[in-house]
Image 1 (tube, rainbow, N blue to C red):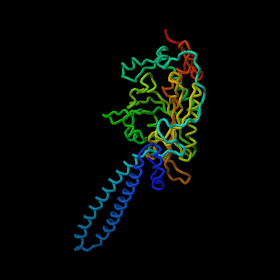
Image 2 (tube, helix red, strand yellow; image 1 turned 180 degrees about the vertical axis):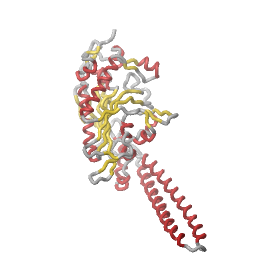
Image 3 (cartoon, one colour; image 1 turned 120 degrees about the horizontal axis):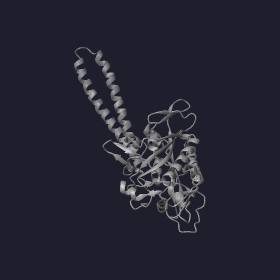
Image 4 (cartoon, helix red, strand yellow; image 1 turned 45 degrees about the vertical axis):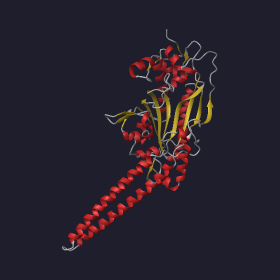
Length: 421
């Protein structure tokens, strides 16, 4: 949730953020109204309780003759207090709903507009010039005995798959490399649960407008996570962290699940957009003043991994209308996909400022020892989709695929993946 103090002092900032996102700015006014009504209702209830308490002292000092009437009046006052408290509770519920309806305020500098209004910040590497007709990742993967979509669909349905043989090895090599780099950069490795409670999913901002994307187990009231960002964000819920020595960094290795609602007909071929995949996600807790610098650090770690797999990519500043509910700023790294003649997203890193931590009750102590709301950030360090870029960019005319040098140790030193007989 956004900081109510900022909203009260500068509502135009929140309105401008909504307009940049292409969202309704009137939700800001509804929140301001709900905030004022809640404060008024709480003040009225507090005043009545104080009056009731003061009156209670007079009853004890009253004469025997006056006491029955005073007790009757005290009962009437108690009833009014209950009504006032119920009004305050209802007003607080309205405030919470209005508060949760507003996404994070975008960071200064984030582009306005929708999905196509991103700004390209940098190109890294040059797309390969192939003197043969390139095969897409699925054709390559099937010839290598690495990807089996047909049996994935037979067993589980559309958009499921098997990684087998060198395909499984290639993913393990990539994820192990990513985790090793994360540990070397001070991240604590984590294997988190992939089923979480509703309050964990809601606390990170993945419910509400994103409900259709999430798998829910109704009988258990649990959700399958689409990213380990969710359990890592909730890991320190209702805690006070020690950030005196810098950010607390975690790297979560997990299976992720996404329904891909509304994406029918898009990227249905291969493993670009699937329902289940593996991912290593970086997650940082830091002081709000350090969040922008930490965001650049996460982007740097992503660049290091992309350089290691030797694929050309570009870095984009994602437009406000394409940001998630929790993100104030997001940078994506998109790798070149030869058969699509386009760049496709491989990594994403978001600065969520204090939005998630405020919902989850994650705080730290400032220099004066006072608890303050922490900032949270996240970023992809490797995921199954990377196999698309690796296979297509390193393919050779005979259908074989060169293994990037950094991944060879994970494949027993194998330098080239050869098509199976």
